[in-house]
Amino acid sequence: MVSVDWSQNSQEDMQRFCCWYLRRYNRESGDIYSLLHPHFLRCNYEEKSLTVFIRVKDWARNPEGTMHGGLISTVFDGTFGTLCHYWGKQRFITTVSLSTTFLKPVRAGDTLVITARATSIGRTLMSMTAEARTHDGAVLAATAFTTFMFLDKEFPGDSWQPGALPPIPCPPDTLPAQPLEPR
Image (cartoon, rainbow, N blue to C red; front, side):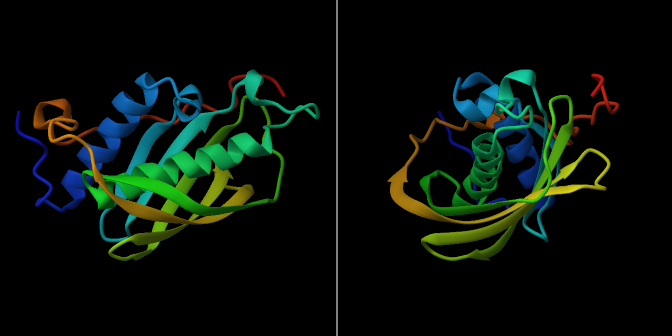
């Protein structure tokens, strides 16, 4: 089987990959990020950014009734990982450091919109920053910055096949009406 043609670097290519990665891989992998059900909203090749959103479920609450801080960090880490996978192509990646600052509580029923941006992409390291805002963007709930490492190991050549990627254009998911549940 032929692997993805990584020589293509464009807005369309990035959108196809990020959309596919979030819709297919993360929702079917069974890992913690997939349990949060990340949705592709948009990406920007020139800005090296990716925006996703999640709907905060009741199970994600801490004893105080707000979203668990570790899960907010998980959302950041997974979003950073998706962005890093696009720029790292077939290479495995790993988080080197991740720092999260919590500013406002996030409640069950909230839609959290996360925008991650690459600030530096080197041969082995990639640095990124991100913001998590409530649905309407009025509340900045948390910020994060990270460094990821591109590893020497690559995914098998048939891991990301051209047929697995969605056609162009890959439509973004739609933000749900806010709020769905009473607060």
